[in-house]
Image 1: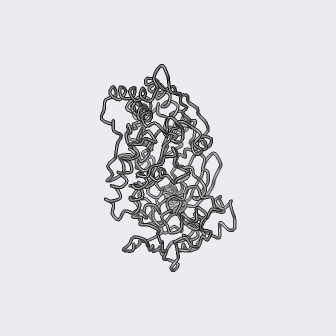
Image 2: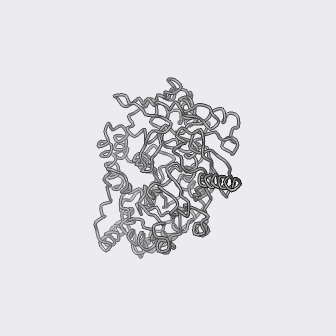
Image 3: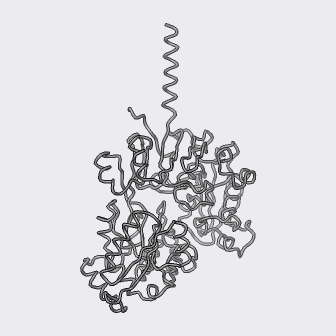
Length: 526
């Protein structure tokens, strides 16, 4: 009897260990560019980076900023000084305490031109950040951040920024372990070297295959982290990834092929989850080239003739919505400012489009010849093939020119194009990110090269607004101006379609990159 009791106890311990070792397998749309949050611009790196590192604030599962490495903060009466209080139990994965100095080091590194940070947008409101980035201020220690004591970080702003807690959840504001970076240099974000303060540690990285993270026992809230290991599996081949999900080799896959959505929804009710997200697709117009950039009538005609209902409902039936404004409808409290023809019928739009083209000197007998550049991607190709037919009706001959992403990006940034198609993604209700690209002074991400004093003034007013109502009103005015000038043509508001096995608990389709620590998995037999 004694051996039976011992065997039963051993089996119970083994079963408990198996239950405790929870694994989540998440699809990763492409190979990670870098796990250094200040270096890579690839959007899908975010999921991994923010599981490994935690900022002063984080976005909760509903995309709202909440305390992260900080317990809370105070704001001065003039809105120009924020004081953040760090958690006394915060630790790096090697046991070192997380201090205010770690954030000072990271933020200075972010603005240092020598770093070549990919996108320091989130910290631009900090005092002297713009000047250091531009090279007009050479002393990075003049950035408006200081460690008042090991657990107190003071941030001085050059202007009011009521959305700073949201901005500080961005990867550009994540802390870094200075000793690790100084020891390993560019190799610091590798297995065996990486030191983070997030809920997970870097266990393994197989290029072009997968990245595996393990629960960090030193994380300040480790008791509430329910998943023990998360494996990010590269799923750039959509069809292959769909098969892997169906074979139960993936728990979550967020880019199933559009042509399979109806079948998947019928075959796996409740496991294909969908929701609108803060992503809009648009056609950018090179405003530095005639006649597109010099004749508003042509831009209006192109927008009028674009049948967004057909594009969203038939060409790419993924649930996306026709877009008549720049800001998606998911932004809380914001009232979109659509183009003037939103409520016109398609027949009325085409009649007006032909009239405008004729006034500009073009028509079927004298077509306007344009080239559209786009990244190599099937959904872009299908969408633009349909646009080619639509625009032919108003006397536009469109040539499509596809290219690899980096080549495409270079062409657009150098303004070596007529038209291009792009998408913009925001992770939280970050209106500023939606508008900042189109400032006259933005030389990098102002895709059309748009310049408008009225737009700049409205945007600037929104930046320094003292209340949310003032901020929303200013940005709404900026959008009205932009939709009048039409440097871009809104096409669709995107919807997230994610295959999520029933064993995954807590996934929200409207949250693009949820932290793994918000999720849980249950046994497949439960």
